[in-house]
Image (tube, rainbow, N blue to C red; front, side, top):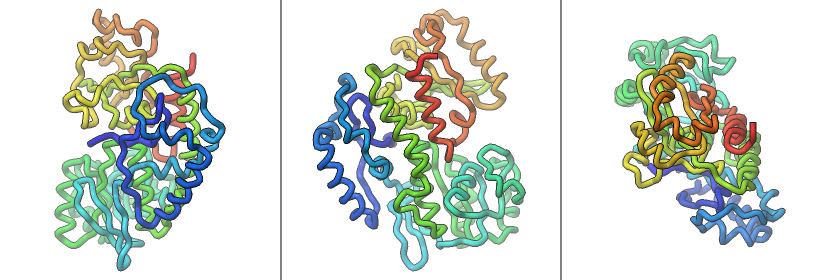
Length: 370
């Protein structure tokens, strides 16, 4: 699955995204595009260019005033949302059309990051799962279903749900979703593994439509998008784009993350170059196996590391594995002390409403001298 990003200035603006825009927003987008084409005619050629030449220093005033609403609308509409007969129809992660009833009253949520997005979109829930990260204050006293990895059918059915929200990245939840649908219970099976920020924007639109708090004007995400957009603009003014390796480490394994991963997407949107090229086997996925030889050939300026599990223990294991290795020691990132361990709320968990802060943090490590 190709990575999804907002059109932004990364040298010149990359435009590999598909434009599949919800029909009810076409008239609004046409007005925006017409207005922007008048004031920013010089940028029209840039938006179709895939050049990797130096970032232009001649940014016009119309660029800096560009509407953030246009930036949001440039995110690929992955759901193709339609409302008919009080049901919301959407295309799921497997490309199949699904539907759920609007304004559900008895919602069971099986993943806290999605619970956070659901509440952000005006919804409520009967349940949560174990953990405190991405748990809304209003949801702290909800029924705890236990581990998201070992949910029981009985505990879900006992709540008599009219909608169940589940994570498609978890095999056990995918199996439960099939069973619940066979019982004619609506299920939202959401896959947010790829392109976390773009998924966040899409999920808010879908969830708000289901909850009757339609976000067709992107008002719910406007403040977040304003911060993200201004950070991208600052990045576009940089003269050079650093080469970056994005790593994911547990206590036992290390992986390289692609442009489609959560951190990889932010790095890409901020104009830096992920060392994993599109033609590398597995590059269409979120992570690929760690390969020190490949990293050494690319010799990145910066290495970002997301640490799974206990941060201190995982960091010790990561450094014990690599820091005494002469090949790793030869890397520019190692020599220049530019290996950054990301806060867990930006690298492991979904930033959600804190995406603005996450982009600012990544920007500071990419471009600001410490």
